[in-house]
Image (cartoon, rainbow, N blue to C red; front, side, top):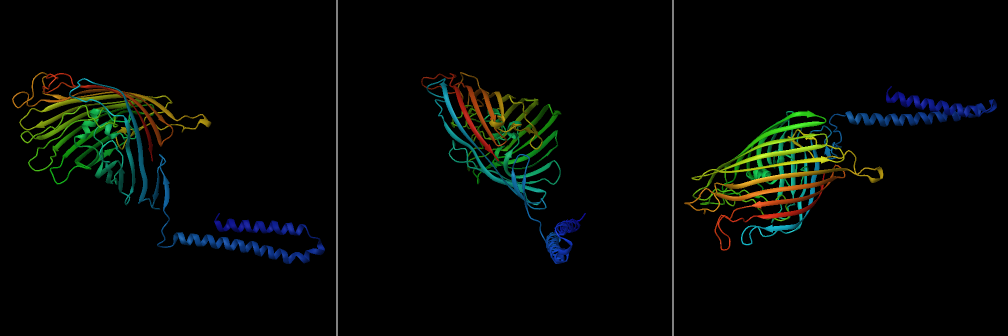
Length: 494
């Protein structure tokens, strides 16, 4: 039945009821006197119907009028992100961002040498990430993202541009990317910093991605994925903040993963990746192509690095290339989750032996409240826990709770024999970056899909043989350190 018919039927029925009511109240002698009242009542009802019908027809005519544009709309994603979208869905703009505030305390620090090596660490607060940006569609098959990061207050300057990228997504499962972004080399790096089990990624992973991938890195490439496969290849350039006008860093990486098992109750993920430094950076004319490998001990409150190769590359022996190989394994069974990676690093310098290093980490988590980490096909990684019931004490819900543990190590010593000097004639290829082993346990609370609180305890053993004879410290003497740290993060994303 049409709108017109419905309104007419309703009007006539109403009028009939009104007339019957009036008529029932009259005597035969009064009937003649009320006829005019009945007619007037019917006219009024028909007038209301005519006005309503005219309004509906005008609206319909406006909606179908040639050249008329439907109004834009507000959309809400499954993860409760809001955006403004054109009526045809071809253009959109949504707000995105997040904040991570870290507090770190070092209750125990022991230097293994009072003359050289790390001497102390400072407790404090770090606005680890403070991001705000927009993302959306730019003509149907193209998407864009711009995110600015004002965080990382423990360093001298904020990071600045985190992401400034355009993507072509016109073919299902394919994304062709250009701009600045986080580059998904390694499983740890492909996992969003909002989704990692611990406050920081493992040191061997950070060292691997710092070569020429990682955050806010210029890149061009493509990835193709299904619910089981992920394969991608990218060329990378300098990161935000790198000096321009000198020899810039150029690299490339490839990564491929496969979900061997995929079931609502369990998954098994494997992957391999390779990264190549094609051109090492330098600081200007007549300077060396050089790099360095280093990382803070899995916490960003103090800027001191432990595992550190120092500068690799001189004018006489510049860095000519580097390769990193990665094997990844992850999976879950119901509310149990595990993830690990092994890395091998090769650094090539003209006239010297190839420097070879190794690193690895393994981590596992158990969700006390029963939720599980879900696989994310677009990144070939796993997402953080989303609670089945948001925090609501009056309803008996306390969000999701998770306990986790990790062991990681990296060895940045190569071609070195302890007790022998390093010089042009004795061990010229030697590098003494030390060996770092870290143990972390964590408790994560997810009140809802926006918030997370992380409490981490870290113990790190750093061992290094003194490569240079100094007063009071013999050649080859231990100059490492032992560190304990307690840290808390407050995180909100949108």
